[in-house]
Image 1 (cartoon, rainbow over the protein chains, first blue to last red):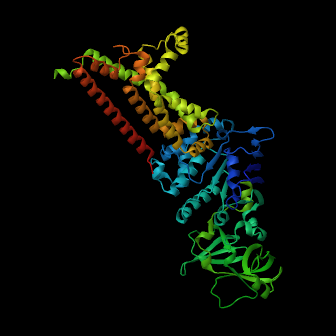
Image 2 (spheres, rainbow over the protein chains, first blue to last red):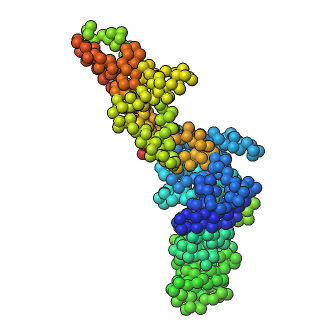
Length: 380
Length: 233
């Protein structure tokens, strides 16, 4: 799948001028509020008619203002999960889920391929909403509503799924409840996803590809770890939560101390016990503010994760704070230091260092499960 | 108990009133929904003029509305003559004319109730239905219409009640002909104009009260049913 987007659209004084291409997996449209993310997905869905632009999925042109093409939204087959769910209050959950089905066969007439009759069962299973089928949306919790909304969009047999900050209106516990379902969706369904978010944590955990938007323009496009480790983008991605993404595999569990050992290119990690069998791939977000650097191998240290590496890049400073990228055998880590420390340790590209990370800094929120490697995502 | 029994003429008036009110309500419903949708959602020149025109019968003296109907829909009126010559439909001094008068008088109430419920519908739900593959007609039928159903029911009850009680416009437009245009209010009025008519007027008054109570009860039940279905949070 290739989604090619080029939109120019003026809203008052705000000019959106976004151009990017992306493929399968989960593409995060990432940026601060007001950067134009929602306008982009609304245009793809057909809710907004852009002043100029072209949007195409594979060969199918959805919008081309030059040749006057604007496919109406009900012919686009683009699923949309809205921030507020937007379930139909007068229908049961089952009727909500099947709503798109009334229209899908006719719309999908031109696309060959089997339409398994167990679709509903499969989606209900995937999202864990079997117990809700006969209820009405009014009484569902926020998390349940969003799961039903995802199922409803999926069952309309979309060629692309848009999700506009589907977790924004939920508290932390509800977010944690839904994230695994979105991960399963990304890994087990063939539908590509465009996911709007302003949360580094969500993007780091979910995204295969990141499109970084800033003030209506595309500031960067690339694989998640690539975009996340670019020091020049830190002011845009949000410094406080910024950090590198490490792809690691569960090696073994240390039951005596309740720890889990992971292996990545950078070396061996120890953190709180993770409920995943050995061999499971995990995505670990290591926040820059949790990483310390030492010039020599430290001894008598409480931090369990000590990874040797080389300074690769030193970012621009804003007076006192500097981000430093370290290359640990091909894996990037970012450390956030004071300019004073950088000068005191005489850090410069090529300096060998040790990165130190406390195990307790790697909490549950830093972990994402079952991610596909970038190469696999490309041809899935 | 003999005084409680309705005479055949009185029964006729009751039946006629119910028929007139029912026909007036049902016949104006499609137009009522269309105009309520246009007023709630549409952006077009002359919208306030249309709104004013629809509300006019509510503010004008009913006799004036009846007289205007007589001028327009009478045998020699521009619309009345056209209908009679081309379609063979005669409204003046017929029960159908009474239904027209009642419909016109009840129309503003119906449109207002439906318009309010249309305005309360979250248009974002309709967008969502569109992304799921529903075209505009299907969105209206499967999302908008069920969501405004309580408003439609309320509008119909209001229109029906207004039609049951309509007097001024009806008597001006189609007069007070027993068996043809003499509705409940006209019959009660007639009874009060003749000596010894008190008993008849009283009986018909009781009937009016009973019908009004039933209509209210029905609207209450339907509103409760609709709210339960929507499971208001």
